[in-house]
Amino acid sequence: MKRRYILSTLICLLLLSSVLSAAVQDERPQDRRRARENMRTLWLLRMTRVLELTEEQTAKIFPIVSRIEKEKGEIYLQVGKLVRELRLILGEEEPDQKELKNKIDKIKELRNLIQKKDEELEARMEENLTLVQRAKYLMFASNFYRELRDNLERARIQRERQRQKVRKDL
Image (cartoon, rainbow, N blue to C red; front, side, top):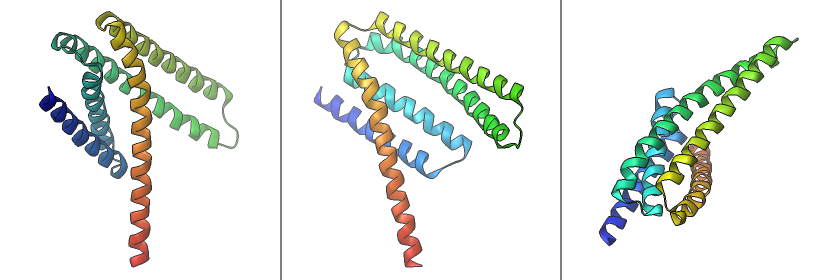
């Protein structure tokens, strides 16, 4: 059991470091996609450890989470595209009101779809987890993304400091 815990911790740390380096250093779409996949994998591994999932639970939950998170990722890409288009429209001298409303409505529709995916995930988790695991899941989900965001921010600050040091040395 101890060996398994150590191994899963090491895997999580390796994945986290690759996620952080990819997210901080690379801005190419394929690198961002890979970073999202790494984050999803890290999320699944950490969730398995925190919730102490059985093999049977893992076999049921992993495909569900992977599918829903992939679908949400595709929706987020659409939202990002619409937000960029919205920004361009707002940059015009006289933004087209009809076009603005159309983009806003599409973004709202996609956000509702993301919310439905989250609700679907919650329902599937309830079907497959014990009450204690469900409570741990709620805590894990909120903590994981907060910690990830904090780690990304620290890595960004560190990268900026390194850039400043290199400029100073030149």
